Amino acid sequence: MSRHVLLCEPSHFRIAYEINPWMNQRVPVEGPRALDQWHGLREVLVDLGVRVELVGQRSEVPDMTFTANAGVVIGDRFVPANFRFRERQAEQPYFREWFAARGYEVYDIHEPHYWEGEGDVLAAPDDPALVCGGYRFRTERGALDHLEAALGVPVLRLELVDPRYYHLDTCLCPLGRGRAMVVREAFAPESFRALAEAFDDLIEVPPADAARFACNALVVDDRVVLDAGCDDTERALRARDLVPVPTPTDEFLKSGGSVKCLVLQLDAFVSASSS
Ligand code: ARG
Image (cartoon, rainbow, N blue to C red):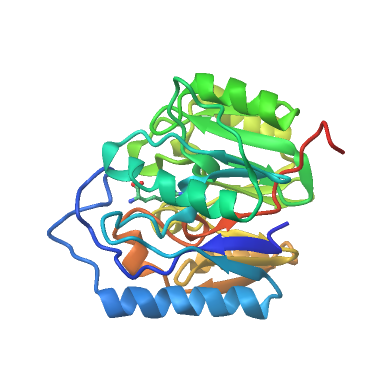
C-alpha cells in the first residue's frame, strides 16, 4: 500500500565499514548530496500523498537511514529485525524505542535466527497475503518460519544466490495485479521458477538497471518511485500503464541501497488473525 511510511534523515550517513559488495570505504558519500537526494525522495513521497513519519539518526549508526531493515510492521505490531552484522545491530534499540513510544506492540520472533526486516520480506501492494521472503545473505531461512507464524499467511521462500543482491528488495519488486520486477540471476533457479508461478508478468530488469537497483522501488498505486537513470525499466513500466517516478539516489547506491531501502512501510502487512 505504502500510504504510510517511516524515513530517517541521513544526517550521519557514511561508508564506515563494508558489509556488502557495493560498499567501498575509499568511495565516500558526499554528505550534502545525500541529504539533498533524501529530501528529494521525501518530497516525491509527500507529493504522492504518502504520510511520512521520521526517526532521528544517531551518529554511531551510519546505515540507520535504511529504515527498511528495522523490521516489519504487522498492523499494530512491530517485529524488530535481528541484524546479521554487528555494525548494524546497534540500530535496533532506537527503532524499538520509536515504535514502543507510539503504542506499537514490540514483538520478537527472531531467536536465534538473523533476519533484516522488509529488506527481505515483501508483500504485493494489492495483496498483503502474497508475501515473498528472501534468505541466505542477511536472513536465515528459519527466520521466515517464525515470520510466517506472525503474519498468519504463507511466505514464498526465495533463495538469493548473488551477493550483489543480498536483500530481496534489491532484486524483486511486486507491482500489484500479478506483476513484479525481478533480477533473474539473483535467484536460485528453483526460486526463480517459484516466482514465475506466483506472478503472471515478471519484468526482467536488464543488468545495467539491476545494478542501479531498479528493483529497489516503492509502489504507490500506479506510481513506481525508483532511482533516476533506469531508462529501460521506465519504458517497461510505462508499457504496462504504470508511471515511473525517477528520483536520484546515487549517493545511497554507494552503500548498496536505493529508494525502497530508505523506506519502512507502516501499512504493508496486516495480521491475518485480527482481520
Ligand atoms: N549498507 C546497508 C547494508 O549493507 C544497506 C542496506 C540496504 N537496505 C535494503 N533494504 N536493501 O546493510
